[in-house]
Length: 141
Image (cartoon, rainbow, N blue to C red; front, top):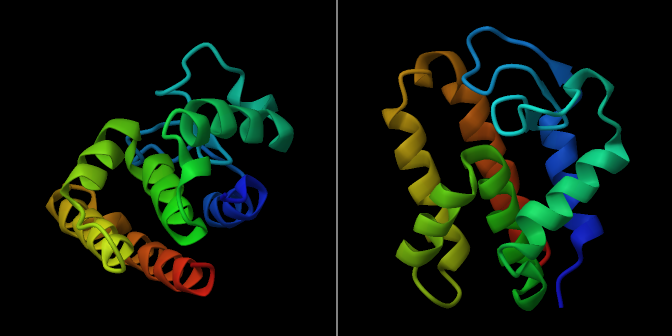
């Protein structure tokens, strides 16, 4: 059984706090929760506990991550938060089964990132996040 608290701690450390970068397609965000994805939410006043509840319900539970090994669950959660649930599900279907699952999943993520028009602006940060996720996933198989 996977540990949501450990996985969400990693995600929140990557996401940081409030941002309203006009170059970010998500628009206004806090703890990775975007106004684009949650248009009725008061993003500026979102609490960490609110964000955790959203991630548990809409990401962790929706992707049935309790049934995955911890490393896989972490990689999937981080991918879903950063790329969206739909894209994460596509990556999951494409990833190989077994010990190479996380490597394949995160590699697919980098390939897709490199095709984004925002790559010149965010590519370095996205790459570093994927690498940190790979390390954390390997440390918690």
